[in-house]
Length: 358
Image (cartoon, rainbow, N blue to C red; front, side, top):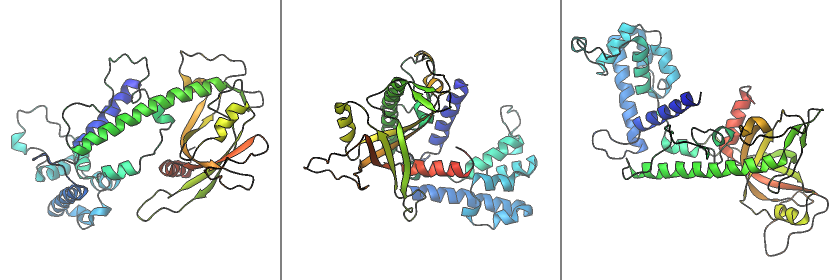
């Protein structure tokens, strides 16, 4: 299964660089406007071919580009066509050799599945790299942190080929150089985050009690069970954006620990990064954890979401502002922190929830 996933990641990287923002003829970097012009030129040529050769595709030929350039729409229009019609369109666009030039070439693949994918992949709308970066979640989730094909463990033998960007003396453009460094720095940080999470959650020793609740058999200096969590604000998106402009939440923890550890938690500063973790253990109380076995199934780790500290709340529910004055002493052991959630990740989670996913 890991081999298949690794190959899929490598295939995604090949697809990314096959559509990179660079001129195939001159090697010059292309702007988003240049890439849009190339896309419009290709889809217009396809519409002209459909208009000239196939009256059945008249609705596709006369539609505006924005309504027909998605993968789903292209498959809807070209999926019902026969192999001969797909081959005629591809030859009209010079995407495959003419019939008299195919003789003697056994390696040519001209079946219906290939021709349909050729037309769709060439003419589908390409996601802007800048938009993709702006929509990328700030913090890694459980899907990336424990994906050994992206973030290898310390026991990686080096025999396989990981789908990681390579740093060498040649780069396509300055943007390609910066993007590779960004991805590698992000994955290096993810590796350190994984080690910290495994250490903290492992020390907490989460077990499943008889009443189906969670029992923590240990304690950790860097992790505390959450008593209450509530999203208190979801601001409207900015013009031209899909994600909320701001998402804030209140996280309450019980700091019934030693005074020096309690002081560390109370001194969390503005813009410090924390992680919200959901565990649903299946092991009964007293079960020993095997450090050589996979970590996630043993502790029942389900979700990991990053957040940024805005401040600790006082008794009136207001954020205690940082300043030269010492923070006020609060009664009791419970402390509530106001945090900023990742807007992009919040949008993804809400979309999944609307589709019936968890």
